[in-house]
Picture 1 (spheres, rainbow, N blue to C red):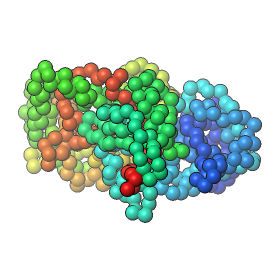
Picture 2 (cartoon, rainbow, N blue to C red; picture 1 turned 180 degrees about the horizontal axis):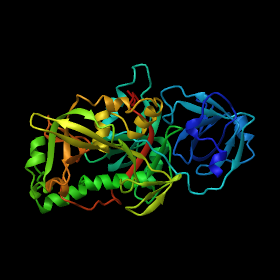
Picture 3 (cartoon, rainbow, N blue to C red; picture 1 turned 60 degrees about the horizontal axis):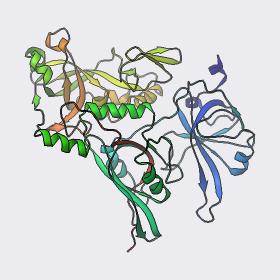
Picture 4 (spheres, rainbow, N blue to C red; picture 1 turned 180 degrees about the vertical axis):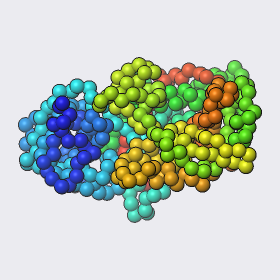
Length: 450
């Protein structure tokens, strides 16, 4: 098989230069001197068919010596290169290594068989931005190589502002999900482009910092996943909220608390219509039940692995990659009862503080362990979660209850990942609400002219 010829990105280390990978160029940009504007180097992000990516760099003389032109989106074979440790806070991808091309490196165009995804995004939840920002020390520049996704609201057309760097173009908007929002200011060429394309069906990226990209309405599974989440959580644009309020007064559904004993003994079919939360302590994680599964982003259902591809029987569809999601079985206990609770991906991510993929990667480094440390640490934790009941729970055919998110008892409202504007099902006007994927940005600094 062809895959046996190539190394995987996850296997790269600093032990040799005799590496050969087949990868897609998902992003590329130049490093430019701030003094004279000359090109200092060329950067590319490479993604392989195992959905692993890495940052690669070449000095101008090396890049210009490649016999094969490298373009964004193309698939190539890269042979003979060194691997270095990735340093600094502004790493364009979250990996510990980077590739350095040399005069011995060869680049060859490869057939695009569709096995390598077009993009890979590792998103930070909008609700976690300030927590991430607080990790930076005062002497560090507030610039972040992280990825966020959301809906554009309150877009303000292009205008000019007098700054200490002179007159600069600027557009402003809010990036939102169903419960978080942040004000965004976009400057310079990016502001001009964003203003021109905002109302158009546009899928090409534009950049602000050299390594940044901004995608609007991207044809990607992550955008589809975000649309589904917004719809499930009842997200409404400002216009839709106004129209809904004009028809009827908004009423937030009642959140009812149940004990574990209530869940196991007192359920009725009427409870299937309710939004229920419960509080319990985790006694232990069940080691005999798989704590993660492969899923398809579009429907979020479990998929079947077929050699190096996956099949979603729900859609149905064959897909090249499938992200890992949590599904953690825990023994739960409160003052009234004990039973099994299944922590589904969203609840699990917020409780353990990491993704299933990262937990799995860390777990692989300790093969003698039965469970990742982050799952072992769940024992003894008290959590409050939202329970998604099903008919089997009511008929007592199943005594396992699914927890699909955490619940904030201090505000008596769902966690940031739940909708703060819960409503009946509604369509979303995505020609108005534009899904934005924004890579690399900075927090406000003293830019305005004093």
